[in-house]
Image (cartoon, rainbow, N blue to C red; front, top):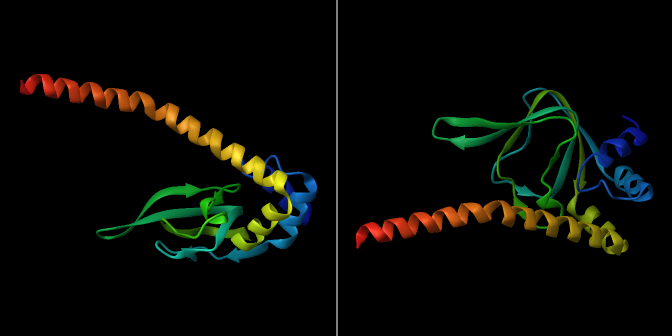
Amino acid sequence: MSLTEDIVLLQQIPVFADFADDHLRLLAFSAESMDYRSGSTLFDEGERADGGMVVASGSVSLRKRGPEGYDEVDVAPTGTLLGETALLVDTKRPCRAVAVGAVRVIRIRRALFKRMVQEYPELAKQLFDKQAARYQQTVAALKPIGERIEDLRRLAGDQVD
């Protein structure tokens, strides 16, 4: 893929959607392009994550360790960012990622991403605002569940009396 195609792909990722073209160009130019054959492991469950990977072509099977080996829990298609949290903080991979057919990824190391955020404070503000909005949406979605649990606790308490 060309640099222009990588930039177009990065624009479609929600985390990068509001980045200016110059920021996306710098990110695409500085990131690594990596190719994997079918069945190759991109990373393993529990492995230290040093950044994120954008699936540029192909798809990736995401697998969790189970009692009898690894079970597929999801499939990440082209345009998926794997390891969003790892772009900002030291973390471990929550699952194994295996190439389904030929796969190309754009690997964005945390050091590169952090350097961009430090050099361009407007990016840091955009990221902060997006994360805050996501957390607010999560809290709003969980509120009815919390209310229902509280109702169940009250009912259980009434039955004990």
